[in-house]
Image 1: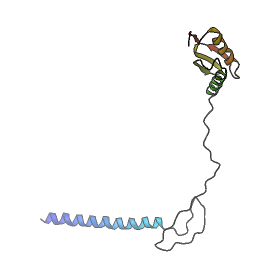
Image 2: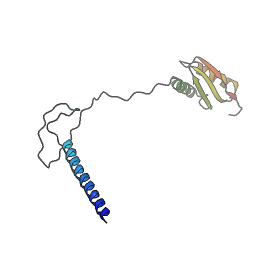
Image 3: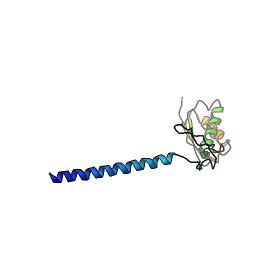
Image 4: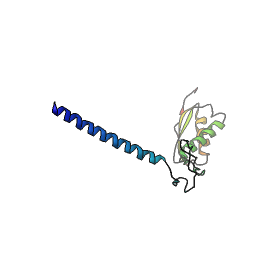
Length: 147
């Protein structure tokens, strides 16, 4: 039984010490929240009146520079040229009804799809060759009667 009482006393002493350390730490945390005219690194040194005890302070917004813009994504030249080609094909009444797709790689255009006859196939290649930025045209259009 004596050993039990000694263990219980030791436990009580450890618990009391932990409680004392905890209360000391609470006091240190409260001192972090209190400001005695300290400077705010975001605002600079500004003299602020000391708040009365028990009042709540509202933080002021910090002015950020308005010239910050999101970076613009890089421009895809191939995609722009493909859109110009599709617009040119869509502007021609005979070609806009055809199913023509254009793949572009560094100005080299490959046409895919179908045409009703050889004349429309060749006309599509000439229209695409006339678009600014097109370096070469590879015509892969397939002639399908009734397409």
